[in-house]
Amino acid sequence: MQLAISVLGNKTKDLVVETLAAVSACQCHVLELRTSNLTQLTALYVLINGNWNHIAKLEGLLDAIAKRNGVNINFMRPEKDQLTESGVPYTLETISLDKKDILVAVTTFLVERGIVIEEITASSHQTAFFSNTVFSSKFILLVPDDVRILSLREEFLDFCDNLNIDAILEPIKR
Image (cartoon, rainbow, N blue to C red):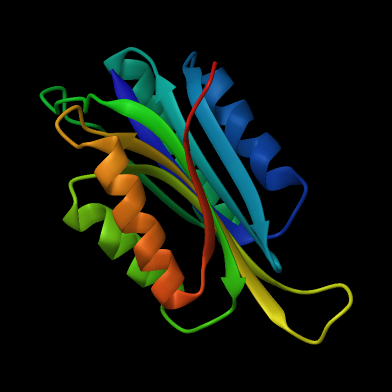
């Protein structure tokens, strides 16, 4: 059985350690973990595996951790019947001047064409030598087998030209 956990709280060095200690104490196993600091907040995403009774025990411990530390902890048991997507994994990187709704435009473009977005990382930052703010993003995508890559790439580059976005779309090489 699996459990997806999201933790959001004030930035402390103990939040990640305390959450992982609870997972270990309940004899559960971490399948995937992501963490990042967002200004003064820490976000933690964990997918764990364990027996149903260990998962139930962990849910109780997570509630106690949330109350003790004043953090938000949400958890959800993924459905067994959910289908996994198939296709070719691609990476997409963009960079542009920081303009309103760039991320919305790119994600809408992809979803409208049936592209599965597995992961997005995005940030805006001040350039080193100029007074402009730049927005960059990185996507991990799954392009379905029925999508013609050449057509997608051409259409995407035209889309980027219209919005003045520099982008690279390429397969993930292992």
